[in-house]
Image 1 (cartoon, rainbow, N blue to C red):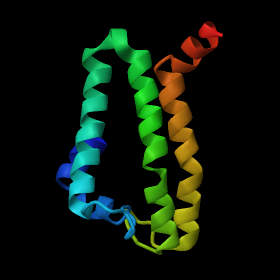
Image 2: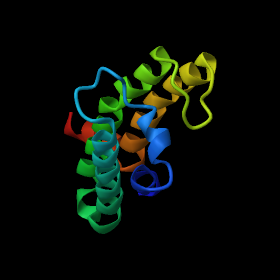
Image 3: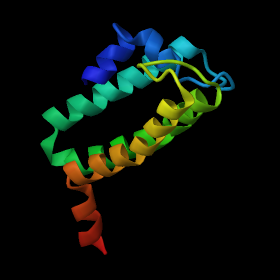
Image 4: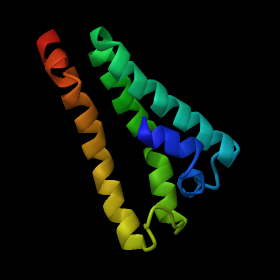
Length: 117
């Protein structure tokens, strides 16, 4: 929820650096929409415990969907969040799969998916 609030307020320009120039939606609208999604996901995790696995799956999918923005930031050499070199931006890319795994593990989605097999 904190990151989502950052999209809407204090880190808006930083998040705009992660929207690739080729993305067909207005940069600010993209940041606002993704922030609203992050707030909704965080809120759902808190207030809908019965839906925790489903929310975890959606959160993991969200992290996958925003990954091209992180790639775009690296390819377009755009600074944001202290990522002021290609090396730093490339290292950040390695952490996106960690976020996906964390969303799946921390919500019990991995366990639920294994149980369904």
